[in-house]
Length: 548
Image (cartoon, rainbow, N blue to C red; front, side, top):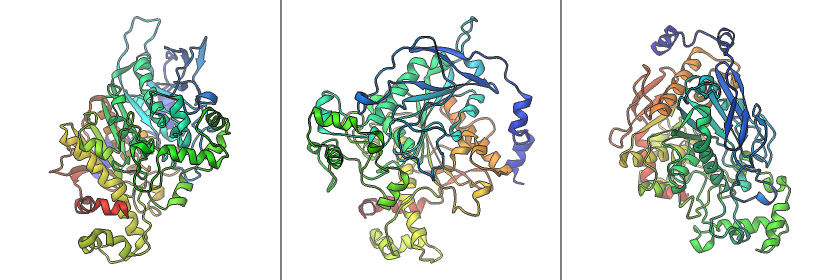
């Protein structure tokens, strides 16, 4: 057994199963009621954690509120029972989702959840001040078309037991969350319409600022964290002036950093289209005409708002996206360049140093998302020009000519790995501490089937919810969950992942190119990026590869 496993066993961190912990450490009676700005909440306590689920942070975005900014919640009388998840946002669930939903989706979905240490919540009957615990806000992924907070994988109890308050939020998806039309521009004059999902995320962060103190949280010590589309959302929020002051640090997991899901459309044609790509308003008008709705006035908007939610979804999910586009997709739902909330792609914002200057953790998995439509090795290598032989040597050293495997690796580096390094470089250039990682550990059940740690496979380790994802685990799985989770807890507490006797995670700089590799057999290993030459090549030839 490796030394890192032995050390954790010695500390007793792997020896006690969760069911035994549940029997050995029953929670004392705890305060389960809190008062927030909209009224009183009743939560539930277990294992020293008090959870409040299904808290409305905005009025349901239905009827006349479809495609409007999130509206304030009307105060309620009595005590709102917050012991079950609210609906996840309207979508067509993807059967292959790595984090399947636990409730039925609905257009009425603007709810969030809070997990807090039971002793953190101020007792209104006692003269005790809030304990000001750090706050971690989770933004789920799913390609902007799938996902939600109800999956057991995102249970925040492990963070709460470690003294960090975990908040998870739903935000509108697909065409509910990202939609533009000339009639909306007329209705919402003075505001840039379109990015309703980003507005939801901002509204939830503003809710945290107003209310997290009631749960014992520190509104001045907030970390935002997301994976995939959630990671891309963290990049957009960190780059948006509208989010300034709402958080103090950021964690970006497989969030891209350049054009994650294809180029971002302009709100309207007068801002300029990108080549053959129409503006977001043009796309919205096309969608309306597909459903028999013409015009740009109030009647057209009213008809759009009367469409059943299922027709707005229109079969859209991650599987249909992948099947339709075989790679970075044309725009069907995702951030819009509106000039206000989202001024452009992260690449330009971070390169100009216009993002918030906050500490950051950023990384990917070693078998992350990557797409390629190439049908031959020549088609894969031609975009590298005079470096084609170098690319072949780096990506196919064994000479297998496996077009699919090599295409996935090149696509992954272009879509995920190099952009994460790029963002890390820009953050370091701004003078902020940034730590980069690669997650390479594969769970026991998947080691014979997966080529490495696939997209989103690190999430049960992050949340320490392995039992919700796997039926069979070994000590290396449990040890990795403890280590990966511990680094993020440390970062949320004080803006540095190091501490508690874990292996030192060095800062990233463009010169050192150091990162933490969460390996299969050795646990966390700090080292220079072994893929540096690959990423340098991708960066050098990025534009033709993107165009290809």
